[in-house]
Image (cartoon, rainbow, N blue to C red; front, side, top):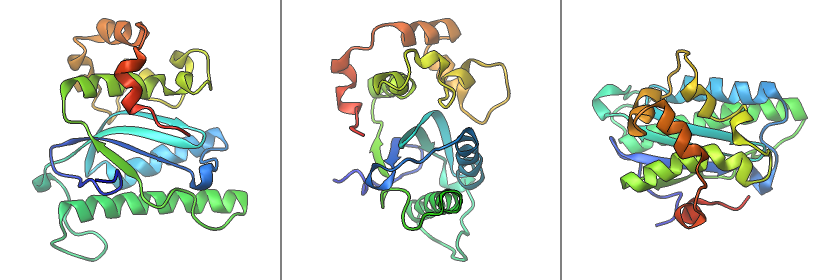
Length: 203
């Protein structure tokens, strides 16, 4: 099944990723990154939980889970009784469209900003979950954008460590890694390429 066709089902975890159309830049300024996160919260926080993210100049990664059907709004787009897959996909489309409109206005451009359909992979086991968090946070360093991912502003790594209120499921992540110190230790161990090779995406 193609990564754009994997169904989004309640209670399941997914690696969500997408890039700029024709590898175009998605983020030009600090304000763009902040606006992306603001719109993500507006359109998706009622429907999905977020465990990790990383925004890079021409692509992004998310680790999310879909909330239980009973806990989300079911009237979207003036339609009722849609499937959960339709509802979540509709919210993602609204999110992408809203962000793209702002960039098109800013850069005086037209047309699609993102690749047509966002991609997703189900996170079906514990090892995948752990390695995916490490991979998402290490992404800026793996792509050569920065020497040390610790200092990268636009990932969830610092937010998970910070003592600030956030909608990130940081408590779940820290518990998964048996606390802050082990969370940091796991991130600073050498990430074995064989463990994350299947996660890597060419941009």
